[in-house]
Amino acid sequence: MTSFIVEIEPAAAPRLAGLALIVHLAAAASPWLARLPRWSAVALTAAAVASLAWSIAAVPGRHQRLEALRIDAAGCRVRLHGSRDWHAATLGSKSRAYAELAFLDIRMGKARLSWLLPRSAAPAGAFRRLKARIRLSC
Image (cartoon, rainbow, N blue to C red; front, top):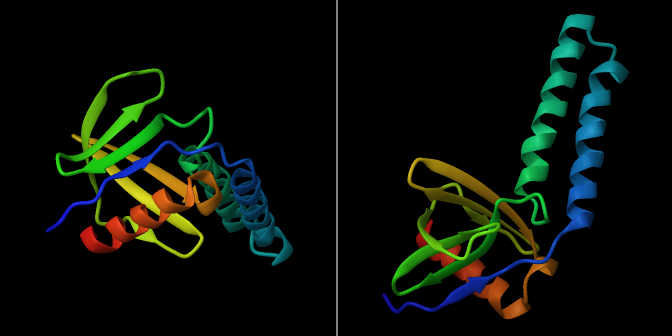
């Protein structure tokens, strides 16, 4: 297979983080608005609040562990925040590409990291190549 280079160092996505916050707050409030029994409303609200941390951690920004991604003939590599070294990684089978969004399931040995990239976080050409690479490999 002919390989093409994908190199992404995304910008922060505060609008996506804000959208995630609004969706999780709505999910936390909905059991109470539906008048579910107290024990199930508490459980569902706790699940919505707990999953907010995971969702925000996948959005590019200062809090994200991943800083850059490079896919070329040598394979997939990632650079972590505060490091100059590139680490070998693979794109997991849960990676998905949509028109305005790409979800990356990145595996570094036993560690699994996620990236939720909106189209505005990367240059247009790099985002198109990333989506094509995801569709070809996953």
